[in-house]
Structure formats: C-alpha cells, structure tokens
Length: 304
Image (tube, rainbow, N blue to C red; front, side, top):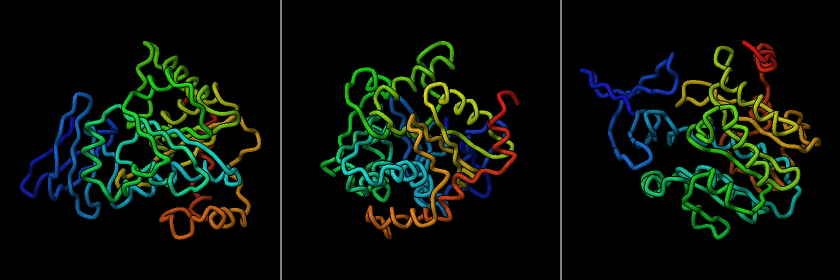
C-alpha cells in the first residue's frame, strides 16, 4: 500500500521497498490513484523527476531517469547478437512500455512478444506515460498478451532468442510453498522457452556493498539452471540506490564483461543506434559490469 504522509511542508511519499531504509519524496501533484483487482497504482508528479509510477507502495519509474534502467536491462544482451539477421524477444511485464520501446530500436528484431497480467493497469499507464512507450505498441512486430507470465510460459510453444523479465517484483513467483523451488521452476520454464544459446535477463534487486543478499540468492538460483550468469548494476536516482541485473545463458562464447574498445562503437553504428541511447556509451557500459572487489567477493560467498 502506498504510504503518503501529510505535513506542513506538503505531501510526502515514502518508498516502501526496503524495510530497513526509507526514502521520502515531496509530491507536487497526485495525478492518478487506481486500485485494480491485481495491484494499487499511484501516479504522482515529483520535482526533478516529473511523472512517477508507484505500484503497491514501491517506486517503479520516473520520466526523468527511467531510460537508465531500461537501457541497462535491454541493450547489453542485444549487443551479444548484433550480427544475427533475424532475432526474437519475449518481455515478461509490459508495464509502461519502455522495455518494448528499447527493443524496437533494433531492426533485426523481427518478433517481439510482451506479456502483462494487468490490462487495466497497462491501459492507464499508456494514457499517462506517452514519453515512455512512444506508441511503440503500434509497431507491427509487437504483440501484447494479457496473461500471467507463468501461464504464458506453461501454455506457449513459442521459442525466443531473448527473454527479459521486467516483472515489478523479481522474486514474486508464487509457484510453490518453497520459495527456492518456486524460483527454479520459473527459470526452468524460461529456459525451455529460449532457443539454443538464448539469453535471459532480469532485474535483480538493490546491489551495493551493504545490500547484496537478495541479488546473490537470485544469482545462485540462476546458476543452477544456466551455465553462465553475469551481474551488473547502475545507479538510478529515483531509487536512490544501485539497481542490478543478471544476464544468464548456456552460450559459453558470451562474456558481456569483456568488450573490446572498438567493438562497442562498431555495434552502435551497425545497429543504427547512433543518437538513440541516452545513457549507454562505452564508458558507462564498462562501468555497468565493473563491480568492486568487495562486492565480487560477497557474491561468490554462499553464506553471509
């Protein structure tokens, strides 16, 4: 539930993601509040961030900096297949449409399927966040289905080169009473939906020198399903923290951490991405995977 505090100096929203740390934002304007059968949606305007999306009391995205998150979720994986002439992608969690917006920049992506469980929420966000989706849902390559990610993965026989999980809570699967078994079941379904040597990417919680346990658990679980997994992180101002991602694959030739100096610019030019990326360049890409020594060591440890 969204936590809003009324004070003499205005209305404040209190982010509820981390139980041990709270971030407060002064709200300039409440744009929309709606409770669907599945979730609670709050859209507010916050100075410096523009219109912001909050779902079930947790910050999701802001107009000012969402591109940081979405570029880092999508492009490192696509860069690994820049020479492929025809590729496909599945997005779990359509939301505001910004993930699909990044995907349609690639001309060699011939099929993009996006899944979302809440059609009412998607329609509401489509109205209030046009700068995030840029009407890319109208692209003929894009198909959107309103179904839970789990049901789609269980029912569909389609295969994809890439699967991106942008579900609002990366650990909320509810597939079994045992959370660990639930996660493994989810990732096995994802692997089954991937083409040979396909790539799976998910956002993966806060990741800094003090907050790493949830990311590490997710990393260990993914390593039970895929041969290789790579951690990355980026600072997102609206989250007030480093947010992380995990790229997983069975393709032994992939190592997104080692990018030759000339390869990045060559990919940008070949994929016609020049001027289309606000955050990622060669320096910010290298920083994305450049974790400090202490954090690398923490992620290798099975117990805190």
